[in-house]
Length: 37
Image 1 (cartoon, rainbow, N blue to C red):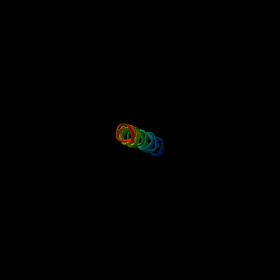
Image 2: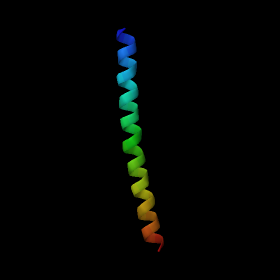
Image 3: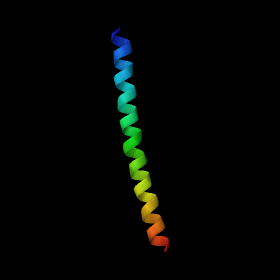
Image 4: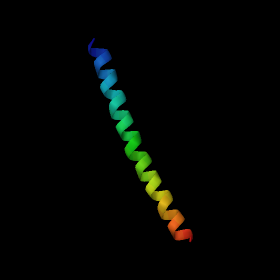
């Protein structure tokens, strides 16, 4: 029971981390596009 709950919370943290990371990557791409113009 505890293991399942910790696994779920870990997944949620991982998802949040990935979302934040993707946002940073998207921002980087936007900057690259702007600088290339």
